[in-house]
Image 1 (tube, rainbow, N blue to C red):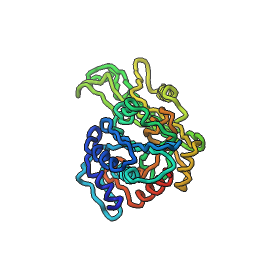
Image 2: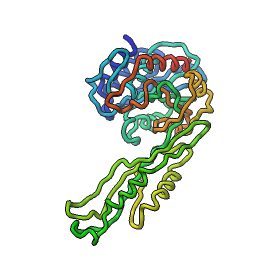
Image 3: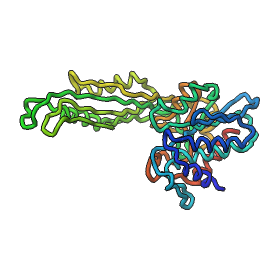
Length: 349
């Protein structure tokens, strides 16, 4: 079978978040064929480790779940695999399984982590489940998270801050709106301010991160003949690694100061931490050298931040174009899988 066929076998397994049991079983069975691995299943997460006597341990991780989609539509067209999760990230998972299930002499110990529920709320993450129940299984000197990066190292990651804004008005009859105050109209000023936001760039250890701010949800209205006295808006702010949660929230409140007023509420709803680049780590510098391209910043959020919390230097590196992730037409190519396999294999040696 070709690498595309191996990846197709994974894409054909429906594994939308919270439904990873079948693919976790498949992965555990394949890994169990290598007698050099200690394989352990923790819920719908699978961890496989070599247990020799080498001083250095490297870790490669990937998530088993996908965003919603129809797995039955997976297909190979020429040298491309199309289907939900092909790019994010079952193509890379197939390469991980291939390298992990093959008995290969190495001068390092290797841990392979296949985890559940990455595509939904971080509080449900399978990686956090492993960290809570069996933290020793994640011990490593350096780690790769096989997110699609088109074969280029993407260092660190940006944090993601979600806030809700409640605008206050006064109810009135729509025939006499001048007796009230329209909260939705007031919300328009917030939306305009955010729409005109100019992204901030931060350069950390030579790696550039570009922040973003978007309105992602709005709600309001009482009845067709009532001036609304309340309107809600949700913002998502992607935060560079040089800012903490509190610093980012304080900046956002100040940014909205002129378009909010007394009685309005800005509330922090959710935060996923950023991660520094870690490009001073020798193992990750070696990975960059193997790719032949300079590292760039990960502008989205990934579990590199989770590894950072565990004090493990980590970087994003995987097959597939990250711009195709979560799209209905996502795909991965054989060339991308081959390149990923070559670099990853060399790095683990």
